[in-house]
Image 1: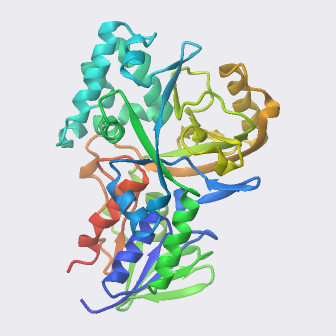
Image 2 (image 1 turned 180 degrees about the vertical axis):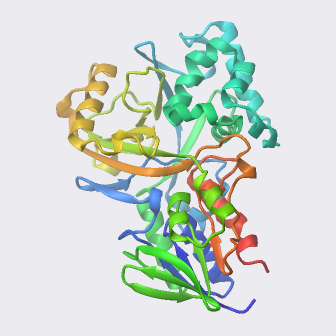
Length: 434
């Protein structure tokens, strides 16, 4: 194919990877990003005098695409691997479940319940062909393998914390993807897990990646909000806040609801598929503390009164020296895009979240808090509903020269950096077949 001028809408890691690969094929590339920075959900922000990821991220030893990117950017020497621990907050108590012995002692479940829970995890980790799981309700599948008590006591609270009432329409492929990825991080069954991060966080990765793209000839244009995309003659016309642009080809990486609005000329079936994607959003508080909470990287929560999904103690993984000896904690809450939490004031969220922390951790005091900031994103990941892969919008659209790739095309995984990079690689054959 002759070199063409491609526009890529969206400067997250998906758009950046597509820009790199299409540029390597000889095309002229312009990357359009509405925000003043690249990275999307992986972007960093300032929390007081530190700069770190806006949302929590880890690298797993099985994340070949992410590790490959880190290596290609010359940052492999700054990749740190750390053994982490997992906690559970259940029945008003914080308990550890970081190894086989602690699993056997886990208070909420009896011995048979624990056996069935372990069997469920082992079963999911061994499934290679996930497609049949799309036909099964996640609740029904978990109840079959784990039993009613374990499902009601452990799985259902965790499902609700991630999906809300959308767990009722989610397929078993959703929990399979989570278990399969997390299980791959463990070296020996339930005994040990190793997570990784890059010194400086994703801010360093994104800065180095942007430098690489620019050096390779990719034009990066920030603060370029796209308002609409239409076919114009033999090319594609893109309307932005700063005027009209012309491209030979365009790739839109925006979430399905935004893509639907940007591309009004898509046919009825494509619009129906885009509008049929069910998303979960996130409201995530970043809290900078004087001292740690409990030294678990993740504390899963099964109590319904807690206003956040989990406690992510980033400095149980990341060296506190990255934060000047202080401790970074994330308090995420996964909600539907229209949840009232998106309109709640930061002061109100702070009051409720910190009150819950004080109840969970008796040693925690409000004056331990140095910084508190809230990130809100309405479309984070698509819910793996029943028969999901049959309803995903096509990458090559009915509009000539217009392609659509976004997180909704991750049909057998969960949204994370590795899956995003993998999606970019996988979609190239549909975007630019050679």
